[in-house]
Image (cartoon, rainbow, N blue to C red; front, side):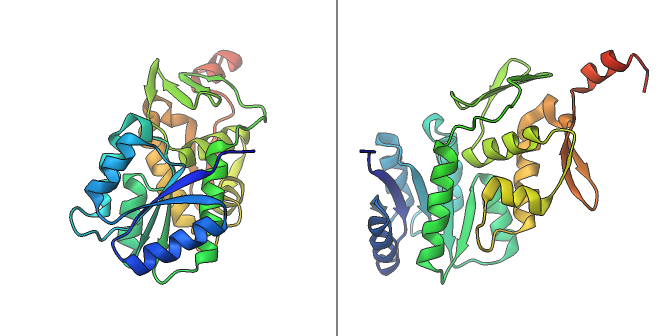
Length: 242
C-alpha cells in the first residue's frame, strides 16, 4: 500500500482552504493547511510535502516572496507548486512562473480541475522515464533517478516541471516541437495551460542551463528544438568549419 501523499495548502480564506482540503481528502491526499506565509515556511522546514497549493495574497508576506524563499530551500527546489489566486492578470501569472511556480489556477476555480493539476504534477515528479535519454550531452549531464542536472561539472537547481520539459525536448532532439506538442507531451491534457506557459518555462530553463543553453534552440513562429548533437561534436563529426 502506497503512503498517503501530503499537500500543503497556503490559504488565508478558511472557506477556500476547507474546500480544497475536502477535495484533496476525497482524492486520497493528506491536506496540511497554513493561513500565513511564515507558518507555511516553518512547516516546510520540518516536512516536505508532495505538492504546495499557494495563494498569492496572504496576510503577512505575499505568495511570491514565499515562493522565492521556498525555492531557496535545498529540499524544496523540485517541489511542485501551484499558485491559487484571484489575481488573473497575465503579468502575475508570468511572474509566478518565472519565480518558480509549476502551474497557476485563478479564483473562482473548479475543484475538479485543481485536483487534475495536482495529480498531474505529483505524477510528473514521481515518474521516472524509461525512454532513451543521453546521460551526457556535451557539457550537460542528467541523472533522472537522482533528479540531478549538471552543467560544466556544477549541479543546477531544477524543478519537476523543468526536468520533465528538459527530458521531453532531449527525447525529440533534432526535431522541431511546436508549443502545442510540448504542452501535450510535458503537461498532458490540462485545462487553461497556454502556450505562453511553455515560453515562460523554456525561458527559465534556458537561463538555468547556462553553457548548455545553446543546445535549446528557438524556431521562430514554430516552437523549440533540442540540437541533434552538441556543437563541438557536430564540428568533429563533419570536419567542416561552419
